[in-house]
Every structure is written in structure tokens, then in C-alpha cells.
Length: 538
Ligand SMILES: NC(=O)c1ccc[n+]([C@@H]2O[C@H](COP(=O)([O-])OP(=O)(O)OC[C@H]3O[C@@H](n4cnc5c(N)ncnc54)[C@H](O)[C@@H]3O)[C@@H](O)[C@H]2O)c1
Image (cartoon, rainbow, N blue to C red; front, side, top):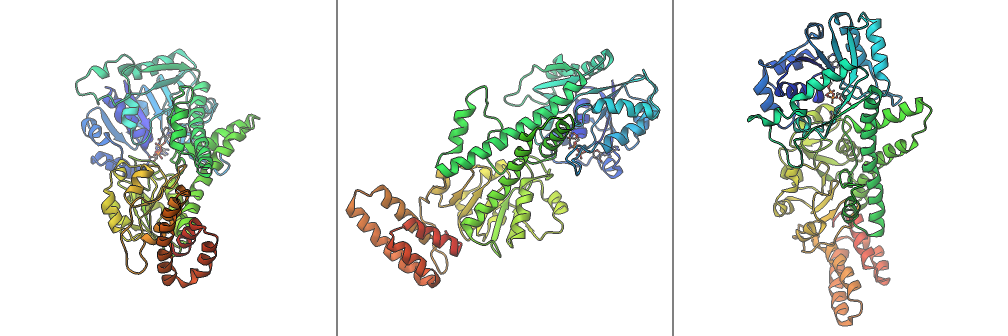
């Protein structure tokens, strides 16, 4: 079967490569001639695991590239439309790219051709595209339009495509249904999985593919409804995380308890700085807009989006509360991509947070294993320093922020990290570490929906004020609380507190009145936080 894929971005390129891998002849088309030229030279325009290997395997054999859609379409049995459908100013999906493609290819639809919406589009788009094709020269009876929404996730796109949970075929006629079944037969019939050179099955995937044949409108709805639901789960757990922080519960425990109910499931229940990327934000907005157009007030989705926006700024607020004003603070940032294993920074929460840090006067030193090039383009008007590795980003910093859940960040050498930071303070927006582990390593560790533990070992002394001082006071306060019945220990702790406070007030005379007031009230926790907030030191 000869298949043309129009649009060679994240979805189009992965689809084209995987269809070639499944045994089809494929032409990948894009209007960006530089991209096509680069692909022909063997360059890989996006970071996506396994994509380079498969491109090498098929380019020039079963996979070709072109900037001329008409020629490609004329020869093809099936045409997948995989161009962008970004958000317009009104929140609705901007369908101008897909409409432009339809206008261009309509006059050359002279043999039975199946046009497939692979891009995510609002329900009823199919009807509009049929009309558009007819108005622009396509002949009735010579083409069909079907929907085949794509569920791949960036970072595991190739294996998601080849080992899908389900394949949705939205077909309103026999021809569409037959052709799409043929396209996916190597997977649904299992022939691909029996090949020796097949991409290995990822853990937790299965070799049985579920084909779901629906009407076109149902298929269109399935895609929007799925993405909006997943986004809702994320905003839901993030709201619960806010509550957990306030009452002193642990969101990981809550997630484990909720997620073990199969009706709920634990996927997409990770608290953090919210969702991003090129799909969820725009799809939530587009789904809400399409519902509104149909007279349904899907207000829940407006709140999902609002919670997600707030989540990023709440994280920055937390940083400011602990560090004090951010002006001239040196902040290390780990992660810029909207999620791990991709270079995609579209709608990345990390990018929004970096913008805000810089707006508040912080000096940002950022590292991402794959997304620095794209960040340079997106943040070209903003002064940030790009670090070659995570340690360079952390060196000399007043705090380190983890904003993307790259595996490499979870494997950092904590001792080295501790020794090179100016102050060992970590704000983890992805809950990559266990709080106790970080406390044991000497970090003041703040994450999302979990308590910040007291540091379990003193931080090393630095020039001037020992950074351990604030920590000493905090530890004394906690120990005093725990041992309230044991008078001798409290007396001893009080003695330690006195000498710690004497050293602090000698170094920061301006804090004396506040500390004195807190001391009179024996409010050692307040003393500790007064010192942290005013000095920016833990
Ligand atoms: N990125 C994802 O993870 C993902 C997952 C599922 C579905 N989707 C959906 O798939 C669609 C594509 O998303 P993407 O992330 O691949 O977008 P993208 O921006 O990475 O790629 C779109 C490509 O289309 C090309 N293009 C635009 N107009 C064209 C034209 N007239 N002719 C030929 N090429 C043209 C662009 O040059 C670009 O290379 C969107 O509707 C998106 O919602 C994306």
C-alpha cells in the first residue's frame, strides 16, 4: 500500500517511519523544504527515542520525502493529514493548516483515495473537510474522509505507535473501514510482531492490538474527550496536592491509595507543576469551545485549565516564600522540556516558570538533556545561561529547581550536588526524590503535595554565616516539640539554641528585634523561618 503522510512533525514523521517499519511504502511530505532537505540528508529534526534508527533503516527504501503534496497524493492509496491544529485566539482549534492541505490536494483526487484525519480536530471537522474537498475540485465518489486519531506520547512515540493500546478507526463507509484495517493489519494480525528485526515490545505493553471501529464523529470525540480527561486527572490531583500540603498529608500516599482502585488507576495522578506540551492545553480549550458551540457549558474544563495555570505560579510563589525576593538570586533549573524524553518545549510549564523567575530578577542557569536548542528559540528575548550539565546549572546556586522528570536528574550524585551549591535548597516540581532521602543528604527539600522534612545532617559551613544555623534552630524546635515531656533534654536544647541565635544575631543585626520577639514567645519555628525568609539562607 502506498501511503502519503502530510506534515512531518512529531506525529507525521513518527507515523511515516512506523508505517514504513510495518511494511508500507510511504512518502512523508512537509511544506517546510528545509526540514525535508535535512531529512533527506539523514538528519533527525526532533529528539525521539528509536526514531533515528528507524529513519536510517527505511530512508531511501520504503520511506521517501517530498515537498510536493500533489505528486505524492496522486500516486497514493491513503493520505494521512498530520499537520498542526494549534489553538486560535478564541480557544478554538485553528484548522487553517489542514484546510490549506485539502485545498491543495483536492484537484488531484482522481482515483479512489482515502483521506485520513490524523491531526487532532474538533468533532464534525470531517464533514467540513468533505465539503471543502468537493468545493475545490475533488469529485464525488472518488475519495472518502475518515478519522484515525493518534494517541502516541512524545518520548515513547515509536513504541506507542507500534504497540498501541487501541487503534481507533472512525469510518462512515466500507471503503474507509477496509483501507484503514489494511493499513494496520501488520499490527492487528500480529505479522509485524513475529519479525525478527521488529522493535522490541516495551515493558507493560502487549502484542494484541485492539481495533475499535466507530463512526467518524465518535472517533473525533474520542480523541478530544481522552486528552481532556487526562488533563482533568492532572489538575484534580494537583488540587488535592495543595490540600495535602496544608493539612500535612502526603500526596504520594494519597495517590497510592486512590490509584489502587482499578476504577481510578494511578496513571496521570502524579502531582507536580502541571501539564504542558502541544496537545493538552490546546485540546482542553478546543474541546470546551466545541461544546460551547453546541450549546453545552463544559465549565469543568475551564477550571482544569485554570488550575493548571495556577499550579506553575504557585510553585514560583513557594520558591519566593522560602528564598525571599528573587532579585539577583542565582537559580539552577533542571529541565525545560514539557516532559522527559523529548525536546518539545511547547506550552512547557518549565518555560513559564523560567520566564517568571527572570521577570522577578533571578539569574537562571538552566540545563536540559535535549531541549536547550528549542528553548533558545522560544526564550530568545530572555537572559538565561545554558549549562552543559546538571552540576554546572547547580554550581553556586541559591536553589535548584527540578522542572522536568528526566531520569538522569533522579540519578544525580547528591553529595556532589550538595558540595557545589551555595545553599543546599531544592524545589522539586516533579517529586523525583523521596523527601527523607533529600533530608538525609543535607538538602532543604520542597516538593509538591508533600511535607518538607527537616534536614537530617548539618550542611557544611560557608564563609560568614554558617548555613547550618537556620537548620540548627529548626531542628531544635522540632526536637523540643517531640521531647516536651523531658525537661532535661529541653534545657540542653535551649542551651544550643541560645548559642545558635547569638551567632545569627551577630551576623544579621537587623533581625534582632524579630528574633527577640519570637524568643520571648519561645517560637523557635518562627525564628527559623524569619531567618530563612530574610536572609535567603536555610
Ligand atoms: N505531538 C503529539 O504528541 C501529538 C500526539 C497526538 C496527536 N497530535 C496531533 O497531531 C497533529 C500534529 O501535531 P505535531 O505535534 O506533529 O505538530 P508539528 O507542529 O510538530 O508538525 C506539523 C508539521 O506540519 C507541517 N505543515 C504545516 N502546514 C503544512 C502544509 N500545508 N503542507 C505540508 N506540511 C505542513 C509543518 O511544517 C510541521 O512540520 C496536531 O493536530 C496534534 O494535536 C500530536
